[in-house]
Image (cartoon, rainbow over all chains, first blue to last red; front, top):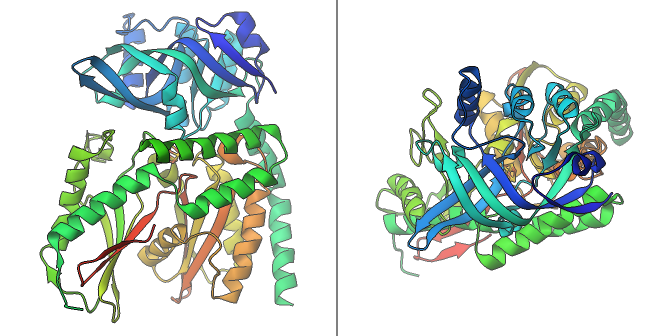
Length: 207
Length: 292
Ligand code: SF4
């Protein structure tokens, strides 16, 4: 397990060396949204051969909400934090392939069709800790721009400048490995054994 | 002491404050449990994840900020002593307390109250805040617990109705639900389980059990055994803190039961690692006691 400090745009070499369990801190730029409607709009834009309001090519695209407040000195980002990625499973393979994302992320992982898309295009999935807003927010320097401002704050496409942004834990790599798939398989394989032990424990405590 | 009514203002400010505290501070017993989980883990990844969690909790508390951007929706459990006198509309006070929180909390919270029919998001909505009401015989206070529910913690709760189930069936189903949830609910979680009663009652028991502090003994020996057994079983699934693997998927399994008919509802609910849970008592004397 290694720890890296990487700069965006991420290149293929950066991505290929990342392994499950590695911890990454990012410098550069990230694009975020926590919105289902946002993903639908991106899909619509692709279908109509239009560009979304923010350039997503090669981006680090994170399922993340943010709270940004207008002040006399400009926009202040109060906090950022990941949201569950699995609910975007249906969109992500198309988005990853179309825009050639170099990294995606959020929490809870993504399904096999996404893992395949990441492997095919060379992209990793970063898991962030739900409830680590104080740590993640520290790495956010500035909200650079937002798109689809008619949506609520956390759903807007938001481009941030970041410095030492993390911790980001590699949970799906670019080589077809997914921590989520591995853990679910291991737990499912063990389940009947776990149930047998429960039964034995019960018998021991009642006898 | 002179008896004063519990006023609208007291109820409003207490429910408002309980919500704010729950967003910025994890319970003391959670800190203890997370620290001992950190000691119990041997692998690098789960150790790191737990370390990040403890650091985040400490930072949120000292910097008076939110642990998580998903502030959830407000849910309260309100238990009213039969000796309590009301000095106003305490039901409306909870609605207004939430409105006040939305306007005044720093940093601000985002919109999460969702209309399920239209998908529209707001700071208010039908039946919001969600409140369960109970009566405490003979008490001269109102006991209020606030436990806002967010997507990760709320999504994986489940309920199944069995007919004359064995404990084997019940425990088996619980484990199926644990594996189904995987690490989606930001583990290590608190698991609450309700067995028996009726459809709604089992769910209520499960929810209440997620709010029981770690280490409090279960007075029912069959359930005390079951809690121990299931905690071990859940932690042998190997999902671990935030899905990093390891031996800490849950910090506690808490179970309650109710008598019922031969149809037996079994409900399971989860609280994520930040374990939002705050509680206060409002006395007839006018005193507000913050319990956690
Ligand atoms: S489950 Fe809890 S810690 Fe995870 S994102 Fe939701 S509120 Fe935050």
